[in-house]
Structure formats: C-alpha cells, structure tokens
Length: 353
Image (tube, rainbow, N blue to C red):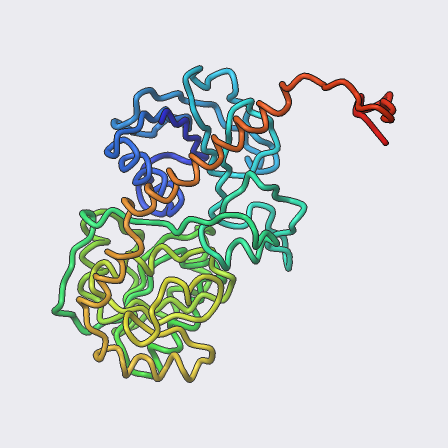
C-alpha cells in the first residue's frame, strides 16, 4: 500500500511525546512490512524510512479545531491517508483519523459522539467509549522493543515518569505513596509551567524523593529497567498509557489505577496492579516483588509491539479502502428506469411507489 501519514508534532520527539513516538514506530514498521509511506508534518522531523517527506507550516491555534489543509501535497498514488489528529476536511482519498487523546477536551467533557464520525479510530476500547464511539475501531499502541533494556535485577526505587506538573498524571499521589511506604522515588519528566519547580515542587524533594529532569533515549531506558516498579497513579481516563507498556517491556511492573485503558494494558497480578483506592496502591508497593520481570516482557511482546500495531492498522486500512471503493462505485452507478407503477421523485430522482 501507499500510505500518506500526517503528524501534528515532530517525529521522533526529543523527550516527551508519546503520540509522535508511536507515529515514528508505525512508519518504520509499515515500511519494513513492504509499504510505501509518505510523511507530512512539521520541520525538524527525521523520517528516513519514508519514501517522501513534506514539511508543513503549523498555525499557533489548536490544530484539532483549526486543521491544516495539506490536500495539495498528497501524492497522487496514495491509497489511504492516515491523519493523527482531529479534522473535518474532506481529503478525496480513503482516510483514517486516529486521535491519541481527547482533542476537544474541556473540563468535564473528554469527548462527545457528534465530534467524531465513522472515519475515526482510537487507541483503546476505553478511549473510544469515553469519546462516545463504542462502535468505532481501535488499535492499541505498540512500541519498538529494541529501544528498551530488559533487566531482571532491580534497584531500590519507584519511578514516576511523565509530565510532572500535569495534575491528571497523579504525581502528588505518587509522592504520598512513597512517603507512607518509606520508598525511594525518582521523578523524571518536564514541566508545562516553567515556574512549577520554584512554586512548590522543589519543597517535596528530599533524600528519598529525587527529581532527575526530562529524560529520553538511553537514560530513560535505564531508569525504566532498573526501577522496582513504575508508579503511575493516573486520575483521568487514560487513552492508552504508553509509559506502562514501556515499563513492562523493561521487565518492570506497573502500579496504577483503573482509569481509562489501564485494565486493558496491565494484566492484574501478573504484570502489575490496577488499584481502585489509595490503600490498594500502598499495598501494591509491598507486592511488586512477586511480579516476574519475564511475565511483564512477554505481555508486551504478545500485545503491544510496533509490529503488531502496524499489522492491525493495515487490516483497518484495507477495510477503509474497500468501503471507499464501494461507496464510490455506488455513487457512479447510472439511475435505472422506473418500474411500472412508480413515480419519479423530482428532488432525489429516485423511483417512489
């Protein structure tokens, strides 16, 4: 297939950027499996496996509500366009729109059915349901296992990895759990608000709770592989939770909540614990040593690799292409002559009894 892929962010990202990493892995796998990929996205992207790269200028507005019109750049031999954000434009090709979060998020409104049509896919069953589209397809995210270090020997620390000042990720809960269980906690990630550190974040740090800043590449892989557990107390309907798959690929169990897709990603009691209450999370810290690192790794190898993700997307591409051809063919069919006894509707030109 010839696939045009649009990314709203730089691929691959330098540090934080789960969506862009997923797009990067998807492109690599699609090309490895014999497809031709055209990449459309912002300057600064590096996509050597793509057949052609088209750089776009991005507006300052929210791209989900102010979509970029890149239709004139789509190569003519494209079989399907895969767009990784929301858009209401008609592209004239078979199209799949994948949202990785909640593009129309407002307080108390993660998604409404009327904001998405049948051309959208989501990244988990919980995600599509939260967006009011339980009948739409979903494809779980997958990761490139070669970028992670598998280790069975662990050091004595819990790891929190993510946007430090984004309240939905649950850092205050992670700190409270570490304090009450007397565990070492390493916090890694960056800030949305640069003043967050001085406003109070540095006041929670001590000999047991350390902040190591934003991490990526080898440093991130080592932190994940050496942690006794990833502590991920997310308090919003997590669309997927890529960091959980990254931890398990490293042989590291995950302690998290039951929010969003976490029960889809974590195998309860085998690769970690999904907890309903704070007390359950605190108890889970005592039980992580019962989790076998090899079970965590096998779980990701079976369900959450970039290869499996690319295979699932290709299956979806074929369905969309077939449907597009069928709809196009039906629209081109000539109108038949009316049967005896029928009258012609002047507006629709269809026979009516």
